[in-house]
Length: 412
Image (cartoon, rainbow, N blue to C red; front, side, top):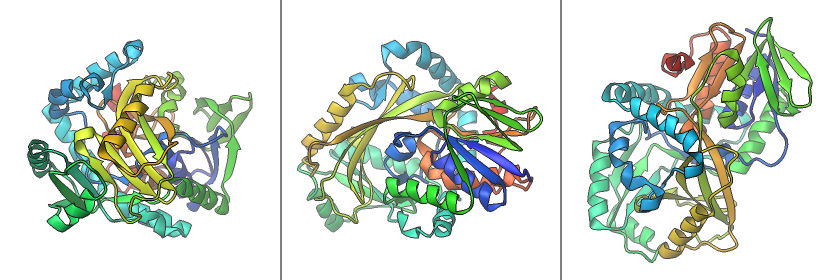
């Protein structure tokens, strides 16, 4: 077991990993820039998506790609100015979408997702805030008979892991109908999935628990990592931190840190958008609702209502596309949702690898450098179980799940 560790990144994966290490007696320093939390850890839909065991790198995704483009009314954005970024990624995605690789990825995600909710229960119970996890499932609705039939058939054929669903009975569908002016043709409700009740409170809770365990925080940006004679992390202010081990958990910013170590990681910033209102008309006890015809999810948090969507492949630093927020507003208006204005706008980058599996492991040539990033749409879902697995790996114990499918060596 290393005596000390530096965790680079204070998103949910980095925080959960830092807490798990500190609980094992590893003196841990969390390194991340200051400023408001704007990353995907805090701007997502709050959904613990244990049903998403089928990776998006799949034959079905390739077949449906044209109709999912933003210009066709779908959620997928391919900005022309970012073609040099997304085209190589798209080619890798196509190669990762063979039936054999899809089956391999589904088996890997099924195994890690099976422990996602139990791991969150353990983490939040340890932090003294179990109520932050709501296990009320989520709802999927359709607005036409054709989309309801097709959507239901899709979910009936899909592997949903530990989650199950049933058709929403007429009385519950009537309650959903009261939330929107658009007639609903059908709905299903999942059981076994969950939600974080308040993302901001989650961040504060995890930081507070880390500090209470004796962890230290350094407000700076890591610009370099070296794994010889222990681990050295260079910061943007010119200083260098040393420890027994460094964990790269910097989300979409992770790839540049590993490139000097010989790893050219095909990580892309898959950007999502949301709008958020303090409107309180949406029922407090309503679980997340997916308007599948619009590729939009609406979540009631403790502080308001959030509508989120889009998969935009670009560079993290590219300017946002205002048309995405405009379309979210148009959907909200068309549905007649109780969504007050002015609504705040957010854009954030999901760290995504072409096979839609995370990267979790250690560098074999430099075992004092470990990594945990690339969780795509499942960062919040998999944060707690990833933290436990990383801490066990670093401690020299068998990880609670098989980490071999998540090793970065698959890209060499």
